[in-house]
Length: 214
Image (cartoon, rainbow, N blue to C red):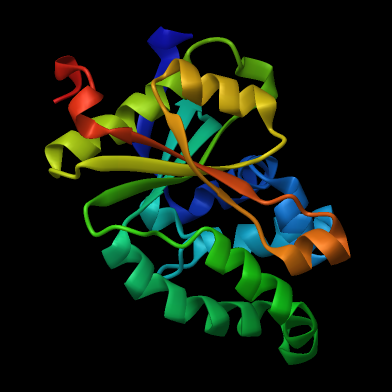
C-alpha cells in the first residue's frame, strides 16, 4: 500500500471521488445544511470542482492509490477563510437556486459560525477522511503529518480541527496524535430544533510536532 500511495494536490477532476469522502467527515452537519445525502454530495462535488470557495480543490491534498482517491485533507487559515467565505454564498446561490438556499440559510449561517477560526497564527484542518476500504493502513496519519509539516514550515503556532461531538472514533484518533479538546461549540437553536450536538474544537501546538516533519 505505502509503495503505491501518492499524496498530491487535488484537481477538479477528483471531485466525484472526493465529494463522498468530504461527506463522510460530518454527514449530520451536511444533511442539516443541504437536506439529504444525495443533495449534499452533489453540492459538495460542484463546490470542490470550483475555485475560490472553502471546499475547493485548491485547498485540498488527496491520497491516491492506483489512480483512485482514497483520502482527502483540506486546510484553512484566517487568510483563506477571509478570501473564500464571502464567495460561498454566491456559489451556493448558483448551485442551489434562491428559494432552496433561503430555506437553508439560518442553518448554514449557524454551522459556519460554529467552525469559524479564532487565531491569526492558526492552521485549521478543515476536513480529513480516508475511504473505509483502506482504513487502518496509516493513510490518515500520513495526511495529518502532511498538515503538521505545512504548519511548521509556514510558522503557524497552532493546528486546530473541528470534529462532531459524537464521532468518538475520530476523537480517539486525534487524541493519539496529541490533539486535546480546547472548546465545545454548540448552538442552542440547532440543538433544540434538530438535535444537532455541535463540534469539539481540538488543538495541538506546532512546537509539539516531531522535528522530522520540519
